[in-house]
Length: 251
Image (cartoon, rainbow, N blue to C red; front, side):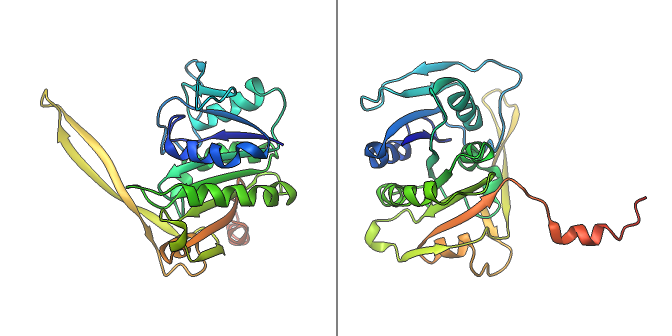
């Protein structure tokens, strides 16, 4: 089995290292990832500048490449130029911080996996639900466990598996739940600051907020100490609202 690993935290991130160590013996593993952190870039890719690629040493890895670009850039290059043939599986992660609810739309980690799913390649995005001092090994081992299930499942083109794992030791995780994406919004905290030249600049931060109790959702599962596994897809059409729009008499 040929596996492509990527992420948005950068090729030298501890989450990617833990993931590679966990799946290394499953087959031929390739690592193609951004050379620096690219968190929050969603599905952006480069149209107005060059992409530079450098082969790097990553724990003796002979198939590791750093790309000066976004997560989607890295997957596009890997699938079209770097790998000899398409992989059997794309895994993006392990991200530091959860990618649940509306965060899925902003996530470079999820978008890296989505690029694989668009081409019909079984794809996984995996994150730990902790930003400070996350524990990666449980997420890495769970991802290894689910790999054959994903490759054998015949996922529809455009569908990927999004995994969020509590960022704690394995013994503290209560179990696994199949979930849906929570309805949430990002509560922005925009701070205005001054640089050393007394020029104003802004720093955007914030946090993910549930819009209701979120029963059965990814955010609910994570907050209760469970691993969340969610099938998500490229098609974002609101089919129920189509019926309403047909009554708008637009012609």
